[in-house]
Length: 463
Image 1 (spheres, rainbow, N blue to C red):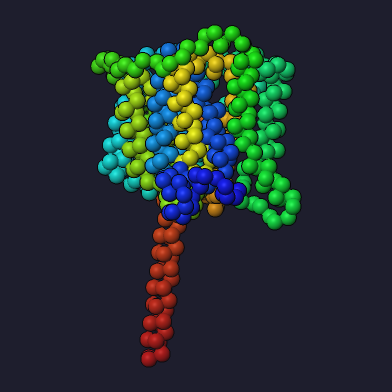
Image 2 (image 1 turned 135 degrees about the vertical axis):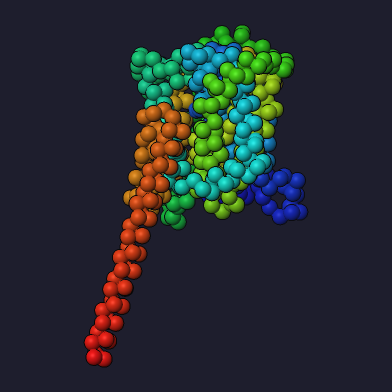
């Protein structure tokens, strides 16, 4: 790890200057630059979804920025890791599809998911589910989500996108080779991140000079530099966006939800979102946090579930996009340097400033952000998440994991892949149990035959 000397927010002794006033959960574990790089690590998923909903469904971007900033503050303080806050992807997908949910229906879907997750967390049922789920099935869900992110990222890089219709609306038009959002720019960003961060493993460091150079290079906040370049290019691509900016936050108001809105939101949005929230936003996040931060106590699935519920019970009433945590976001923020709650606190400060200063007009800036750069950032997040599945210890575990991932990807449903994985796992356990019973019965029968033969021999000897 990078040295922590000289950073005023880093952990230290209780009486060590102003550091004693900083909560332990947001004390830096590495450097400020590393945490800042991790802060923008999950924006490859965040920006396309909120941008598409702002353009197509008239979501208030300023309100969403402010409330997700508050969520980031809270999760950074509570969990002490770069816990991501991301839009609920299934609800967003339905809202941008032919069903085209209205804002009250989107908020109804978020409130319904929040109520169910809050119930599962408070009652402890989420913890029970977490303990009962087989690891290969969870790894299959993580692998499918990671590969799905990677496939989407490649589409972002290769093809022109139309986010006014969907967050994944790839056209058949190849991205131009040159230009301010061209293929060369995206590949240059990709090459820079690889050279700066390598494979993302900051533990494999030797003491020779070469390794020290690689370690020093890994301190470069690659994602932050690439994201800052993208912001600069927004104004270069269209200088007139400055004229469209309006200062000040959007006025807050309660969303009026009718019973019909709730019914449509529940069946169209909440039902497909719920399996993804349980599996990816709670179960997979807790498993991944144990992999990435083995020195820390394991995250409580109940706390994570309650966190998602409370976030949406606050924000959805005011029109903020329904949000959850996500294993992909955690993997992305870790991949680019996030190691503590400070990472998402830095992100919260940025979101809050943008939401309060520009409000909903900030969408004009995001509309010019180079999508190829977002694709590059999303690619690394997906790969980091998929690599969590490399710890399968047997061919049987890998078999279950790959079937679960394959069904999830081809069926475009984490729930379908999860059910397939559970059924396969139980069948394999039943098969092993059958062989164990056969072996036990065989040994018992052999023992009985041996006892009978010995008894017969003893009887013959007495005669």
